[in-house]
Image 1: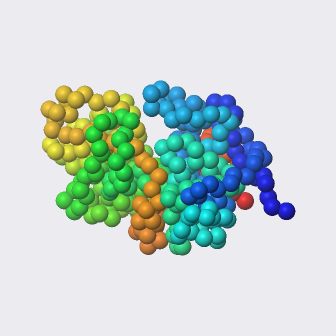
Image 2: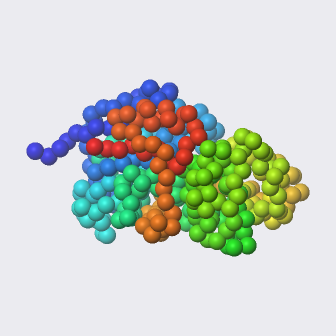
Image 3: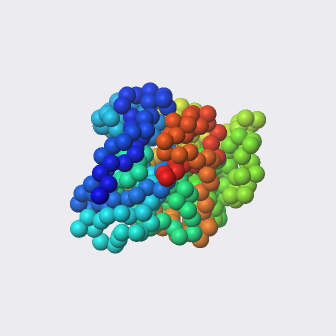
Length: 336
């Protein structure tokens, strides 16, 4: 008998981690351009808890549309189970990973099976397991599209101008704030891959971890204010972003750039006076870029650090872990 139902985590009302419910739901059916993926692991990302709490941290005009109940999740690693007739390049049994349908919130990866757009997927690097692959897509593509290549022409909801990454080479100094987190630790490694000098900002517990990843200098923000210690850098990638991001403007040289991952408020007169640029991108699904990142993961040039793993049924505990902060790398759900 073919399987018609599966386990999935759904949200029926907005709130804290307690609103995540492990349920039996109908199996998805892949449509045109899609494949059915048997999920092995799911990356946990900030948009998952933004969705859970009703997007209260986003301006109303930028909130994606969705209806309840909803299965959260965007990142996955798994195995192709079925392929739509119009899909080329993927076959049953292929191991894949991807960021699904982002920036919409229709990824629905907190589940045993997912219908996934083939264009959002890349082949899982053979040299890493599903847990590490599942931790890569959103964080890796965010770092890639901010630092290496945007790869799309869609505007950010927070700015009119198209984001343009800064050229990274041996003459470039990059400061990464929140360097131990999901985006931060991958951005640090991508900047080092390009030859840049990297200053990592995080709490003191992460110093040896970030040094192992290649950081040239470490600043413990619990003891020092990086904006008082650092000057004349070419680029700041602020993975924390938000209201406090403008303090990093004073660390930049003229012609430098500040890239806040979560946009804040900036004084245009100040940025003009300082001769610096503030810019951000809206990360989007991109299977081709994931393929490029996958080559770096396979070679060990870039690695995904795993903070912790939880079973799919224990998604609530994963969100509780995220709420405690000070995450080193990625939180991942495993699917039996």
